[in-house]
Amino acid sequence: MSKNILIVDDDLSIAEILEFNLKSEGYDVETAVSAEEALSKNLKKFHLILLDVMMGGMSGFKMAEKMREDGISTPVIFLTAKDTENDMLTGFSVGGDDYIAKPFSIKEVIARVRAVLKRTEKQDKTDSSENKLVYGNFVIDFNMKELSIDDKKIPLTKTEFELLSLLAQHPDELLSRERIISKLWTDTPYVTERTVDVHITRMRKKLGNYASVISNKIGYGYRFDINEL
Image 1 (tube, rainbow, N blue to C red):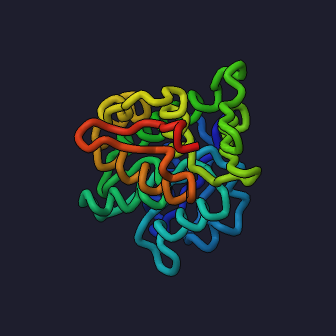
Image 2 (cartoon, rainbow, N blue to C red; image 1 turned 120 degrees about the horizontal axis):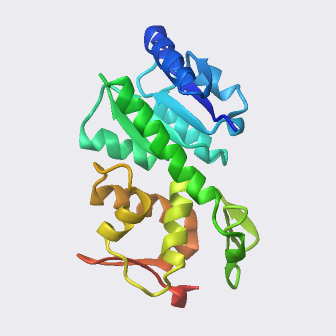
């Protein structure tokens, strides 16, 4: 099945180049010239969104943040002329899955698109026999890719769900940042240990009173502490 990709960029020349080349790779592509236009679409039908950061009106970061608040977990690759580490971490902190600095080569974009889609497919094909992990009112449903706490669904991005699942499937085992990166970001070698920390911090906020279930040991890594449930 062909993958649906949405390009959100107010630079029409860049959008047209991306659209042409992604269609040449066999993807179904739509475009939007603003975050506002993009948000008017059914974003859940897309498998991936290429999102410019600096646009007139709502920024790409703000759009991604609103998507995640609305429970839309569609993967996002940010496109931006800002390429500092802090900008990259900001992108991850609002729920981005990858980050490409302009100017970029089309080959790089296509490679990143393939990597994110491959990682997403891998998660979507989680063995159904795994079913659920249930710790009282804390339920991780691997089939539905959902976390429920006290019967309330917690909106996690795909990366956040993968990270939580990885930790939860190794209860009380300390996982180093290097091991986490090797498991979740195999195709994105530039990811740093700080990226892991950003995702952990964002996820803990969503866990609310259960944030302490993810503990860390300075200099070693993170673990899923079932004693906190």
